[in-house]
Image (cartoon, rainbow, N blue to C red):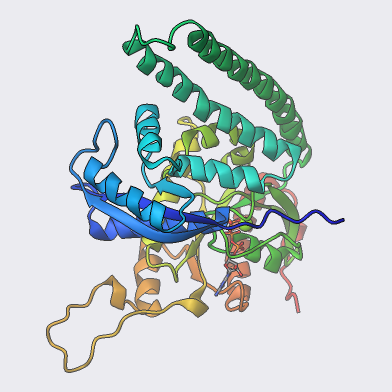
Length: 406
Ligand SMILES: Nc1nc2c(ncn2[C@@H]2O[C@H](COP(=O)(O)OP(=O)(O)OP(=O)(O)O)[C@@H](O)[C@H]2O)c(=O)[nH]1
Ligand SMILES: [Mg+2]
């Protein structure tokens, strides 16, 4: 008998806060993204709860009154999981779980879970496992210090103590084992990268779900998995691409997201090395997403984080605004004299002007899906790759007799 796939969809509620740092609009944006993450992980969001809060409650994160409201809702609506947009400390997590009597997760936890689901190769699985252990370890430690503070509690001494100590030791051992394993793979990957010779290397970077893999497939005749969920790609794909007569290597890799757990950045070192060691970056943006500018900022921040300080000169970067076929903007009626033009009213032309001047012409607007402007995109990549190529192989100039591909 064929085993039935575990396709049970979990009913989920989301909890976010509105504070001085995070106004109502921002909070909605974050929860939209958290909902997409939940959907990717296989959950269905039944309701969102938000609370205006200057500081989180040290014991229960949100107020106890609000929690009670949440508890009633979960009981009446068959909810299995509650997900907080912010990171909860171990004490908060435990207190909330106790009150809600349900599974409680935070954003980091959810992202790690999606990565675990998505990891296919043993390499990706090892990276994710390491990240999960690293997430868990301080939580166990802090859980212990929390218990320690209540010293004397019957049943908390003795076996409890050794149990946590044992757990910590097991996890520590596992971490060092996984690190060793990763080190071996890292070495192998570094050799592989070296073997690729001096060929110019270009890496696709960008927020998750912007269309990196789709673009890779369009220009490299590869068949990388792409779908409308977050983190479709975890494993790196490298393809040789030839535009006109210049060959180069194109890498498609994991997408970024804001508040990317630091454990993940650390354990995905080798994956990110592809980005670090690239000669040129193609930063793909989903212009049809209402928060695409915030996404650009998050991606730039992560790239800065992973770039060694010694590399003060930033890499040549081509900004690719994808999904123009799906771009929509608000309009102002001609007789409406009150509404002021804002970014929500920008046409594609307005955005082009803005970014062309910002990026010194190093940007292009395309649709990877509808194959719009792909030739212009290729021409831009060609120009940039050619510059790098010439500086690397100055004697090899027979390559540059340009000819038309068609
Ligand atoms: N409308 C439209 N959809 C697109 C375009 N390019 C990609 N998509 C869709 O966007 C979704 C995500 O595309 P992917 O190529 O998987 O995106 P990615 O950046 O590789 O995503 P991750 O690997 O998850 O980080 C898919 O459903 C694509 O079909 C485009 O130009 N227009
Ligand atoms: Mg992808």
